[in-house]
Image (tube, rainbow, N blue to C red):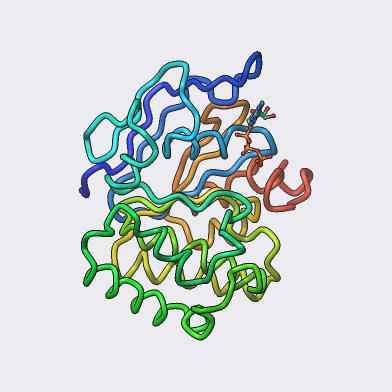
Length: 247
Ligand SMILES: Nc1ncnc2c1ncn2[C@@H]1O[C@H](COP(=O)(O)OP(=O)(O)OP(=O)(O)O)[C@@H](O)[C@H]1O
């Protein structure tokens, strides 16, 4: 069995009086493609933010490759292999495509030849970014901007790539392309992926397994096939009528 890349133990995160994660525990093994599902406000985004160090947990523990990162700075976590594509992409519109990519490799900046090689890899993977490398990122289309956000996270050579709603604002064809691309990275490079996605059908088609969060805690866990067949998931996230599940 592959080693555990990410372990979250009894994570509690509060925003004032709101408890966003309530003793949440889950773990992901190397090379898994995992998905977090759940209604709005279930705590999915907060879980990713806690792993990348953007929110401070009230209690609990987060481990990466067996090492405690609960109190590490976000930069330290990036250097240790946490890649995060936040909701809304957060690319720098005034900077060029290439400058955005180089920012993703900031922790590796001394390895100039390695960074150059990664840039070439990204332009091979996303030829449109190569064509536009001297263009301001603000001029990219929605699909290209999403590709840039993913490529920027990959420039840090993450052990774990977390993506928050990567399908947001993309048309169905681009969503399929992006998932195909992630699946290829996962298959060919063994990249470990943790995805938050509202489009449960497409996410479960690509993921190995997942969790459904409810009020900050894991309500259901299973393989992607088990979740896709579960009446509660089918009804709440896959658009199946409740009556069809009653039999
Ligand atoms: N910055 C914040 N300040 C106060 N409350 C917040 C903040 N961010 C999130 N929350 C609250 O924490 C809870 C969990 O939110 P979170 O964004 O993690 O859920 P989510 O499952 O990602 O939902 P969505 O799909 O809507 O992004 C919600 O009740 C939300 O209103």
